Image (cartoon, rainbow, N blue to C red):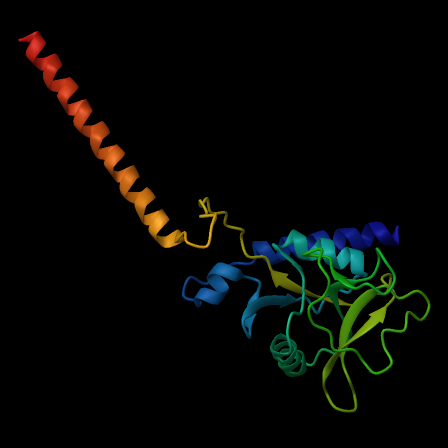
Length: 217
């Protein structure tokens, strides 16, 4: 029964986010990324009214167009640290880092690749009591945001990171076959060849059309 109520609250919360009226005069931030806000170089959303375990947090972020945050640099951590201190979040916050697949090998659940940045609390990660998911929290002594491994079943806030759309480009690549070959010249030559072929094709079409008109007359 409690789980059912919790699921209902999560869906109600998601509905409230997207059903909230938006002011057309608001800045580009709100217009294009709502409910995400720009913090440093990325867009994030922290719902301080809903605590969830790590698995629920991941699903929740996906449901609003994001992913659990993947902190990739000290600059990003410091930007989040400033924001967390400003809005006075007293709870731990889930990130997407985990070692669920292999103990001690921490990966980003979003990218499937090893974490490129970590800033652990002293003597962590320690896997005390089978802790497989990474949360961040403000340290009382120095007010810094640091990482800690924790039990995935614990309920904290989630830092959701806006998911940029993936754009695929079709591009041909020049493969150097020998040291004397110049890719730039080769690509330029191919471009002229394609242009010449197009011109020739258009010229032939015009000749054919002229012949057809002459035959009709």
